[in-house]
Length: 114
Length: 114
Image (cartoon, rainbow over all chains, first blue to last red; front, side, top):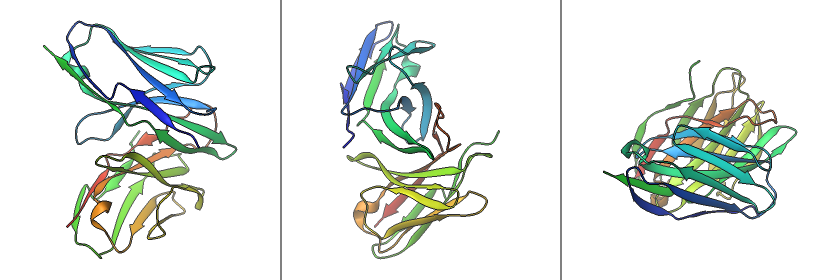
């Protein structure tokens, strides 16, 4: 059974600081995703990582994937208050018909303090 | 390009009632997915429809059902509502092909069961 674990689950950090959050998954997966969710809102797509060593960056966020370790990291650089949200990683398997389903981690609630 | 749309945005029902939630995918997307985000339980996969057929189902009782129409829109039906069905129900769509395609999420329907 595919399982996804995130840590930490809660993070309070100061602006301008850097931090890395982790996402482990239990079995081979085809794709790894990072989503952002603001309170009461839906999920916003951030990154999809397809292969070992993949690295993607958008603004202050950078995601990477190590398929051998079954680990993805999301690195936050010089945090700002607007990054406060819950961040989910998710993995899926792809069949001939497409993505079967997404299996999500519990999410990491990030609070960036001035 | 219009995103995934869901209706209604909010819904209040009482135990034992039935509810129907609706989802319209992004134009060109043939796959529709339903997820439940209940407090404390995280995001859990409910159903996947593609080309009008149910392709995969999560660990939910049979009173959760749905269908996909020829225009690829979808309905999620929940019968005999229970208090623990209170959650945010998210619909997502994708092209149904392999190759890094995101599941794009709709704004969700918040269901409260009293």
